Image (cartoon, rainbow, N blue to C red; front, top):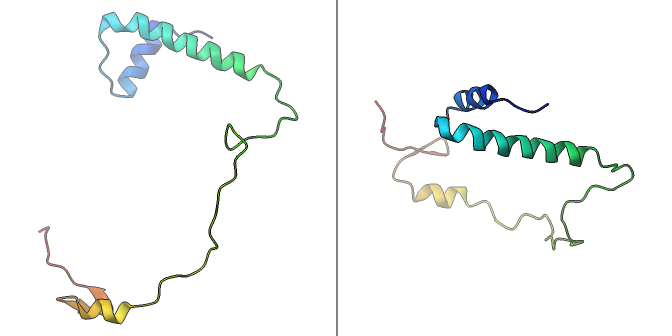
Length: 95
């Protein structure tokens, strides 16, 4: 179902895009070509094709998921100019 000029204007208004009257025609052509390509791609039989996460067969080098930092909360809180109940207190900036 191809779009109309009114559809382009409506989509532009809903997305709060300013579109000049001279841009409606070229935009309409581009959108219709894009939608036709999407329909063409949807018509391809992909049954049995495994989804891919990457265009090439690559694997990521992952590190072990292990805790590497120690709990230095008391040492860090000692540097705070103001703290209460384990939280940093900051000056009020919004009234």
